[in-house]
Image (cartoon, rainbow, N blue to C red):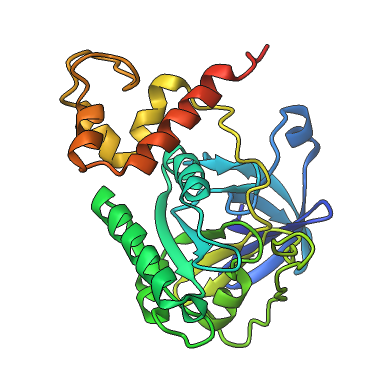
Length: 293
C-alpha cells in the first residue's frame, strides 16, 4: 500500500501527498472506533480508489501532536510576535514557549514589524531578544514590509515541518507571503475596536517553502497548561532548568525552598526577573487547575 503525508484536512477530507501527487482521502471507520483522528502532518498508509480519491488505512506513530491547532510531527515552531501593533508581550511569549518546549518542538522566536517601532521601542525589543538568546533561543527580528531579516529564516525551514504561530494581527500570513512570493495568503490589520488582529486563517494546511513544509495555523486557541504538571514546568524554561541542577533539594520548585539556585540566579541577574515571575504565575495556574477525572 502507498504511504504519504497529510498536508491538509478540510470538511472530513484528508489530502495526502505521495511522490508529488495529492490524493483526497477519507478516514476508514476504524479510526472513529479507536478514537484516532488523522491530523495534518501525519504519515499514513492509504489506498487509492482512483487517481484522485482514496481511504486512509493506517496512521503511523507520531513524535508529537498539538490539539489546537490540530497538527502532528512538528519539528519547529516559529513563534511570531510583533514589536508593536500589538505590543510585544513577554508573558504571552513565555506561555507559547512552555507549550512548545513541553511538546519537544524547537522554537524560533520571530519578532516582526521592526520597521514600525520607534527607536526606544526597538531598544526595548533588542534587550528582550538578548535575554532570550542568553536563555538559548534563536531570535530573529524581521520586517515583512522592508524584508529585513527574512533571509535569516530560510535555513530554519529546510527539511522540516514548521508551524507559524502567535496571536492574531502579528503578521504571520504577511511573513509567509514574503517567504514564498505568490502565495497570497489573506492578511488583515488590527481591529481598532478590539486592539487585536482579525483571524484570517481558517484551517491548517502544510505549504511548501523551499525544501520544508510550513503550517499557517489559525493560532493556538488554547494556551492552558492542561497536560503539564508542576514538577515539569521548570524544564520548559531552559535557564531555570540549567540553574536547577545546583538547587540543594531535588524536586525544588524554586518558590520558598532554601538554597535554591534559581532564586539565586534571579538575584544575580543571570535569570531575567520577568521570566521568573512568569514561571511563578504559570506554576500557580497549574496548582490551581481543577483535577481531571
